[in-house]
Amino acid sequence: MPRFSVIVPAFRVQAYLHACLDSVLDQSFKDYEIIVVDDCSPDACGPIADEYARRDPRVTALHLPRNSGLGPARNAGMERATGDYLIFLDGDDTLLPEALRTIADRLGATGDPDVLMYDYARTYWSGRSVRNVLADRLDEAGPASFRLADRPELLQLLMVVWNKAYRRAFVEAEGFAFPPGYYEDTPWTYPVLMSAGSIAVLDAVCVSYRQRRRGNILSTTSEKHFDIFDQYDRVFAFVDARPELSVWRPVLFRRMLDHFCAVYASRDRLPHPSRAAFFRRATASCRRYRTPGAPTPRRARLRHGLMRLGA
Image (tube, rainbow, N blue to C red):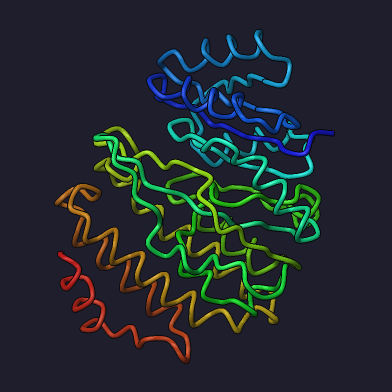
């Protein structure tokens, strides 16, 4: 089996998909497969995926019968994956040169942990590239691998799926899968990190995270941003079903509050007539998941936090 299964969901990214796939195929480390999942994209993503599959036997093109979203598309890719590790790469992002070799070397040096976390840089339309401002959290000093409880500051990093490599046997044993809807990374990343028996870090930029001026989910005005509430419901349901994870409730509550504030403060995400309803849902969620040791989710406190962030 290959060392890596690189899963690439593709929807309306025809302008970027060639660069994405080439960034994998150009790696000096060659022990991988690429699974491109065409999420019933109305542009040329499907034909591009087929073209690459014809050219290279390591590339598989999957075509979903209907548009399902990032979560189900990633699930479809996982079902076909055969690699030791799963790597998720969005169709508008790219791997940096030597990323796979660097990841493979670190996995070997740390005893094949359940999860390896690595860094990224935001790349802007102007060509400017800026490394993650919290890169110091990925300091490799200390034990080669550890549990999340040993380094809880890792939860301060961007909770996305594409800055990590996941041991496929661990993912399958735990039954992890992505839900539908926006913010699908949230109910994947928290449970995965909290459940992992071993985590390692790699202090190296491996992914170029493209900052698109328009067309990506985070810059789309839609009521789909209300999906964030269902996603945190899933995270708390996971934690509450496992008493040993209750220690994470305070930090999870704080992260949830910060996430709600960030969405509310981004004026281009919520339709203006829906902002009051979002505020009410956020307040209700904070009351529901109020946790000792976390900020008190009084309406005044939440309102202050939201307004301070630009509401």
